[in-house]
Length: 285
Image (tube, rainbow, N blue to C red; front, side, top):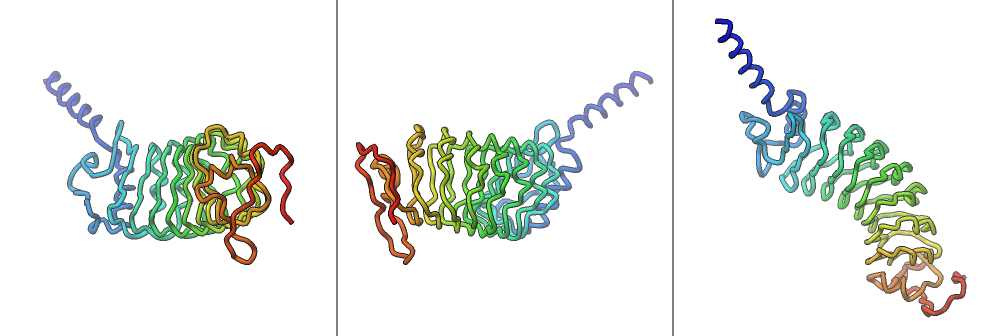
């Protein structure tokens, strides 16, 4: 009898250990389902099934580590409870109909490597808490209605490789900490309302491959130090208010040949210096 009891206990224990997801993680996913009109998703969750069978959910060691619900007709707001998915490494809600603010609580996702909330209708400022995501490699918030300034502590994201925040209403200057993000490879800040100048410290971004500031309100001299970025393959800084002279090497990187907007709103081609000319760059008056 004792052996039978021991066997039953072992089976029960084994069954418990095989539970596919913790109750708390499941409850959090249910909050998302309810907040985004889950009954109308393109690919719905069968709530009678185990969480591991739910589309877009990846579970490892009983914890949700990835949530990919892109282009799935999510309508509503992102619930703050998502910030409690402590093991989450990827959150992809690209191309849905989400509105409201980005919850501050997402800054609690310390294991997060990919955050993609692009192509929605999210508004308000990017929460400063996002700068706590020290493992983050991709931050994609483009094609929303985000406003306010870029977080001043953006430079805390030392592992970030892709920063894509284009087609929003972001204003203000690029924070000084940005120029310390030495892992950056792709920076897409175009089509916003950014102002100020571009610092010569941009030369610190030695891994940069694609750099786009197209269609903002930047002004001043384009720093010659950009030429030090040996990995830079594509740059688009057109349709700003930069002035002065640049070398042909820099102009060749710009896909729109340095087309700028003057104070009267008229487009013109920025003056290009002869590449052999080693004289100091002199700004136009």
